[in-house]
Length: 341
Ligand code: KG4
Ligand code: ZN
Image (cartoon, rainbow, N blue to C red; front, side, top):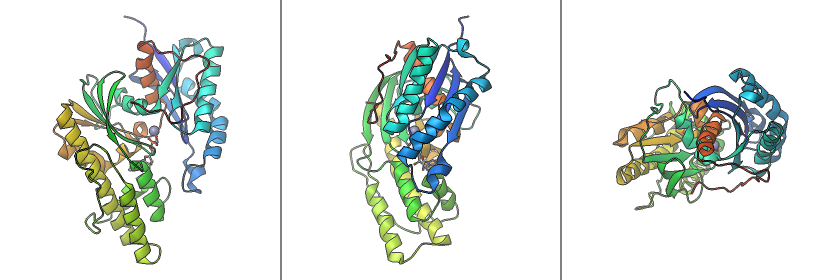
C-alpha cells in the first residue's frame, strides 16, 4: 500500500480564518475555523480591513492548532494548499503569503486552490452525517454553489472539468439572505437567522416575486429584495414578531423555489447522476428538502460546518489539484475576481 498524502489547507478568503489537515483528499484529520462573525456583526456585514487584521492575528495559531489536532508535524505533510481567490483581496493576501512562507521554509509544494471549486470538494470529505455524499460519486454531477458571494449552477464532468450553466445576474443568494435579514432587524449573518425566524412563520403570508428568467439557468434576487424593502416601508415602522417570521418564511420560500426548480431541471437536462448542494446557503434545511422533493436524482449536502467556509474543503480540493500536477510558483498572487469557469 502506498503512503497516504497529507495536505495542509489554509483558507482566509472572507471572514473565517481556517486551517485543516486532510489525508488522501477524504479523511479529515483536523478542521479548525476561527470565525470573525462576532467582530463583523456590529457592522451588519464583513468590514474588509478588520477582516484582514483579524486574519493576521489568528492565522498562525489556527494552523498550529490544526496540526496539533491532526497529530502531524511538518515532516508528515506532503503539500500546502491555499485559497488564492475569489474573495476579499486583503483577506486572501494573508492566507497566500502565510502559505508561501511556510511552504518555502519547510520545502513543501504549494497548491493554489479556487475557493468555489473547494466548496464542491466538501463532498469528497468523509463524514458520518445525513445527506453526506457516498465515496463513489459518478460523473457528471450537478453542483449548485450558493454562498455569500456566489450563486452558480455548474456541471462537473470530471475532476477539474466544469461547464458553467448559469448564475446570478445581481445579488448572490446568501447576499440576499443577509440583506433581507438586516431589513428585518435580524442578527448577522442573515441566512441562519432568517431560517430560524421562518420556522415560526407562514410562507404563504406574502406573495413575493420570483425571477424565473425562462429558458436560462440564471438567477436574479434583486427584485425580491426590493419587494421586501417595499413591504417594510409600507409597514411604516420596524416589523415585529409574527410579521418578521411571516416575511422571513415568504422570502425563504421564494429563494428556495427558484433555486430548487432550476437545479432539478438542470440535473435532468444534463443527465447528472446526483446533485451536490455547496456553499453556506446549502446549510438551509428548506433548500435541502425542496431540492430533494423536486430532483429525480440523489441530492447530497455536507454537514453545516463543511457548507460554510472551512479549510478541510481547501485541502480536499488541493489534493486533487496536487494529483493532477498543479503547483504554484513563489510568485503566486491573489485573484479576488477568480471564476471557476
Ligand atoms: O460559503 P460561505 O460561508 O461564505 C462565502 O463563501 O460566501 O457562505 C456564507 C453565506 C452567508 O450569506 C450566510 O447568510 C449564508 O451563507 N448562510 C445561510 C445559512 N447558513 C449560512 N443562508 C441560508 N440559510 C442558512 N441556514
Ligand atoms: Zn465560501
